[in-house]
Image 1 (cartoon, helix red, strand yellow):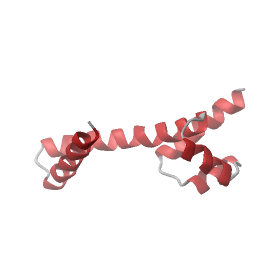
Image 2 (spheres, helix red, strand yellow):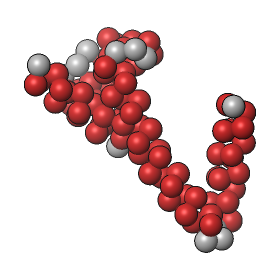
Image 3 (cartoon, helix red, strand yellow):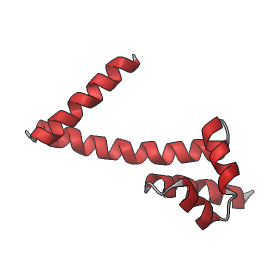
Length: 91
């Protein structure tokens, strides 16, 4: 059981570093076809760990982008406008 927890933690960490499914599969000795299916289905613990890792890194990056936008960065402001539009579309 501890091994499963370790695998999930590593999946989350590697996904947060934006490694590909194939790269994560190779590092963790997972079947890449099955792992890809799990992620596509989105219901398994592996899929949740993968999504959580990606989203946590995206959250950190967006936080930094918003901070730069508030300080007047034109590029960051453009990204934040896209984030706002995406959020409104999803509401």
